[in-house]
Image 1 (cartoon, rainbow, N blue to C red):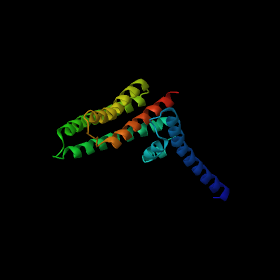
Image 2: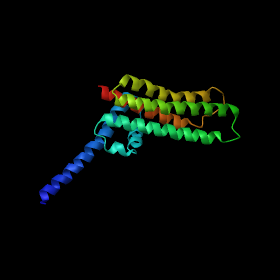
Image 3: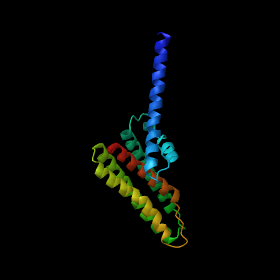
Length: 178
C-alpha cells in the first residue's frame, strides 16, 4: 500500500470520528440553547457514556441514546429507592414518599419504553406525551417531600438528573421534527 492511500484512510477515519463527536456536541448545544433545564456539560458527559452515542450520525440516533440512558437511570433510581426503603428506621412520611417515588419511577420506565417505540414509529406527538409524563415523575417525587416542613428528599440529585435527561430527549425530538 502506498503512503498516500494510508494517509487518506487515516484522515478519513479521523474525520468520521470528529463528525460523530460534533453531532453530540452540536445537538447538546442546540438543546441547551433552547431549554434552560438542559445543561450542556451534563448533556455531553451523560450521553457520551453510552457507546451508541459514539456511533451516532444524527440527532435521531441521539434521541434513542437519551431515552435509553433515561430508562437506565429510572431503573437505577428504582433500585436506590428499594435500598432506602429497607431502612427500618425511616419516618413514616418519608417511607410513604419513597413508596410513591418507587411507583412513579416504575411508571416512568414504562412510559419511556413507549416513548422510544413511538419515536421509532415517527409518532412524535405520542413520544413527547409519554416522555413528558416520565419527566413529571421526577418533579412529583421531589415535590411531595416538600409538602411536610423539615423533610428533605434523599433523591434530589437523582430527580434533577432524571428530569434533565428527559428534557434532553424531548429537545432532541423537537430538533428531529424541524
